[in-house]
Length: 126
Image 1 (tube, rainbow, N blue to C red):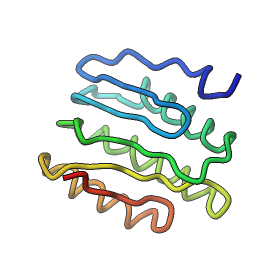
Image 2: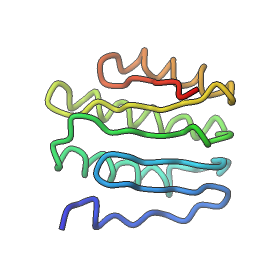
Image 3: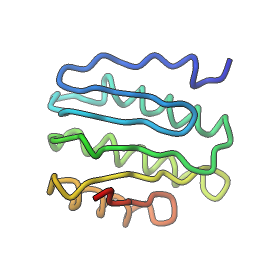
């Protein structure tokens, strides 16, 4: 059994999480919790660790249907980018699939890619 198969997707109000092993995670809805790291931070770390263990070269995070995240939630993506960067050059590249529909995505993810240059790339789906 791979580490991906052992992962338990958390239940988060107003957010649908779809894990498509071994290299894709889709988020749909909103992240509005005051402390999103308590549930999602650990899950994202488990996904990251599973990607490292599987020796993936790329992992896709699809946020095209993630309509809103509060400021506390941006930290989740910064942390993930940091984990990926810390494992370069032997780790995987985090590919974040975004949309132009939600303005917050452009500003937030462009900043994250600049902080984790070479480890994270953003692709606009539309």
